[in-house]
Amino acid sequence: MTQSAKIITRFAPSPSGDLHLGHAYSAKLSYDFSVQKGGDFILRIEDIDHLRCKAEHEKSILTDLRWLDLKWPTPIRRQSNHFTDYKAALDKLESMELLYPCFCTRRDIINEIEESTRAPHMRPKFGPEGIIYPGTCRHLTTEEQQQKVDDGIPHALRFNTNKALGLLKAPLYWTDCKTGEQKATPELLGDVILARKDFPASYHLCVVVDDHIQMINHVIRGQDLYYASHFHRLLQHLLKLNTPIYDHHPLLATRDGNRLAKRDKSITIKSIRESGIGPDQIDELIKEYL
Image (cartoon, rainbow, N blue to C red; front, side, top):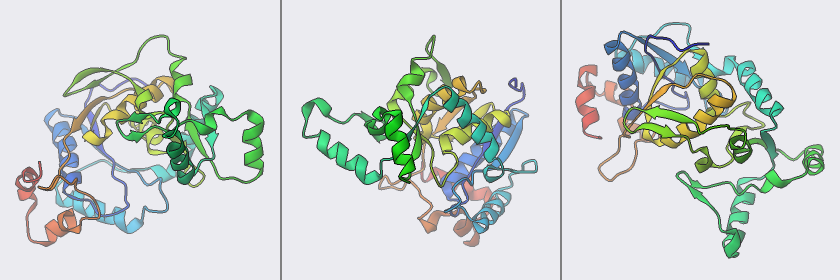
């Protein structure tokens, strides 16, 4: 599939709660950019997390975005309707022997990290998003993996990043609108989980597959996903998917420096519109949190 000459942006919320002012900022940036460039704006619903995503939250999201006067084509792509697309991507990575089962619980990982701090030669590695997974299950033999599976121990599928990097013939690059051309360094995130027992695919896998299928060529998203773009570039290369241009915007935060979150009901779009504030006042309200 070739890249479209027309600018195509998207906003892809997860219906796990009400949208807040930060979501409005991100959605409006994507929408306004597409309008300015004579392009298309696409709404996608990322509802792969069936435990947290609810129909009532999606309904609220649509109401909020319409109130903001955003428009998008239908039908809307919902991830829960496209498990086969993500399974095909996982199968391709599996055929390249880049996935391995990880049986570690969060407690197991914490225990190993705590133990490693007592041994200078085994100190944990840190990345931009915290401690990198120490690779405990990456070293299991095929027989050990199968025994754990046969024993019914729950597991996730992790991506073997170092092995994948060993397949590259040249460095990979991606473009950020603010910082320019970036050399991809996915090792900063370590061995990322791409699927779990209860979730057929993770955000990292779904987003690159969806963006390719929907021909998204300009992704505007929060600065918190900047380092994820390094990993996404590697997946795009291995799966032969298009690579969009990225624009990572600053995150809205309160005066004490806390990022806006769904749990903060005071700045949800719903609470804002119910307070009597009009959509034409949103831009000024956003500025108070930038």
